Length: 191
Image (cartoon, rainbow, N blue to C red; front, side, top):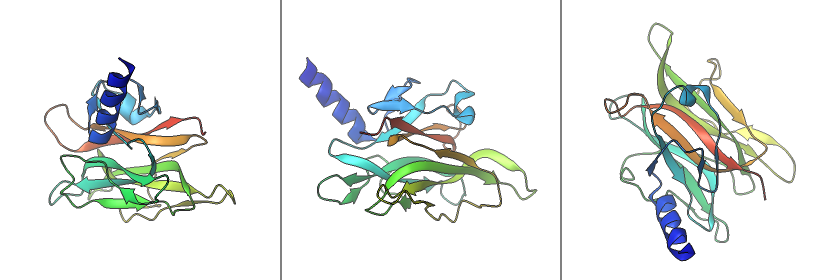
């Protein structure tokens, strides 16, 4: 029975885009609280890395001809070989914006921002996301540049002392939109 559960868990992690119930416990970690994500009952879409890989960044695609995020996935680095991959998904054929830490760094945070309208207001739809990276040897932190993140506009920031094991996001409208509303990290204590 344990072997069957292990195979099922690995299959869910490799699918990356598994639409799991709103359980806070997934990918071997816990979904972080985020006011924007927790203010509705929509299900989380989950992206985590398969066994032998760790989250090394975030990637997302925009809706065609729009500046709204369509889907989010983890960038996974092989612990031994060092190569980076995106977990298999139904959307892997789309162009992905990739924000990735250097090989000497680990993901230590997430910064995301909503779309800004022409009037200057923010729409409750995700414009982009990037990662904060930590060099464990020096303690230095940096944010990976993203053209979708404007430092002049306030965004949502998670600066963590835990290991990021995946990303969880929710769509804006249940069944009527493919736009992403929010994204939060899935974390566990550092090993």
